[in-house]
Amino acid sequence: MLMPVVAIQTVLDGKKEGKSATIRGWIYRKRESKQTIFLIIRDASGVIQCTVKRDNPSWSQAEKVTIESSVVLEGIVKQDKRAPGGYEIAIEKLSVIGLAETFPITKGKGKESEEFLRDNRHLWLRSRRMNLIMKVRSEVLRFTHDFFRKEDFIEVSPPMFISSACEGGSTLFGLKYFDKQLYLTQSAQLYLEALIYSLEKVYCVAPSFRAEKSRTIRHLTEYWHIEPEWAFADMDDLMRVEEDLMSYICQRTAKNCKKEIESLGADISKLKAVKTPFPRITYTEAIEKLNAKGFKIKWGEDFGFEDEKALAEEFGGPFFVYAYPRQIKAFYCKSHRDNPDLVMSTDMLVPRIGEISTGGAREDSKEELLKRISELGLREEDYRWYIDLRRYGTVPHVGFGLGLERLLTWMLDLENIIDSIPFPRTIRRFYP
Ligand code: AMO
Image 1: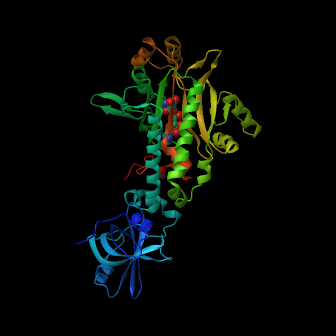
Image 2: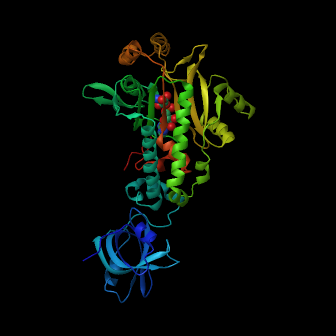
């Protein structure tokens, strides 16, 4: 009878020299010498070296077992300084659950094979690297939910099929919905705005879709969007909640995911340094800074990726740019009453990635909103229900959208956003 199965990390942490342990998992590496077969076994929790001696009845099983075969084994825990994790298991019984065919991904594939790894994402997810990234992703999601619940936000579930654009037509995915034309949502914002009239403080973590042709390290066509929206609040409240969320996530991740962050080779000190308040500069100040750095950007133009990166270098961590020109922001942005050329919108920027979130105060006057809708050539009838929200008990309100994958790409120093999500979707990639 096998003993109860334990996680590999429990064996490593337990340091129970001389005790019996049963583990199960997959063959991660295999090496053979005359007298010993070394099997590195992985499970969800970690990897451990296991050895079989020639005179052991399990030798023949160990000989035939292939990389990525699933196994269950029992053996004696032994300290071994050379083994990864400092302990190994001397196998006494080895059973193969599923013998693997020759695994297509072999150790030591170079840079040139990145495309190959992406084509084999369903298998590459087994790598230690992807295992660690996915664990941190899950923790960041946990901390996000913890934060909003702690702040009394109510989690809501917005629709994915929508009938009109939130963030402009150019990145809208259309689809046939029976005999109608519908779209995939770009942001839950407009629906969250409807919900605040019932629940006051709401948030969701949901997919957003962008028909994004950009092939950059920060664009996906399907990403997960962290979006809160709340009533009776202004720009100052907005930036405070946003920086509190960001520092809460970074501090808790630095503490709880230390091992993962270090194994991924990411800079943990950068996360520990994320403390409130964040620097805030106006759009106009940002333009001046860029022109002083030799960029040629006119007031009224939107920032490009390079502009954002240059700005962010100066701050070394997250910061806000706010008070944007009206012409580069969406129809729902509230205008500054004393200067209608500006809207109450703010972006949070970080080094290397640039913008990771956008937020702002929403236009709460029906007349101003109607003016914006017509100014931008949008069809009033497409936004009938949204305009209704200003008709019945309008209130000042704010919200923001933070892209989970951009956040992870920054936090974990990932080269490309595609490694922050299990099955990335980009203009060229939708398989597997
Ligand atoms: P925006 O369009 O700026 O604003 O999106 C908000 C945040 O979503 C993330 N993001 C993306 N992440 C990966 N791939 C993409 N193609 C992509 N596009 C956007 C970014 C970005 O900062 N409703 C407004 C926000 C608001 O005002 O509440 C909105 O969606 O991190």
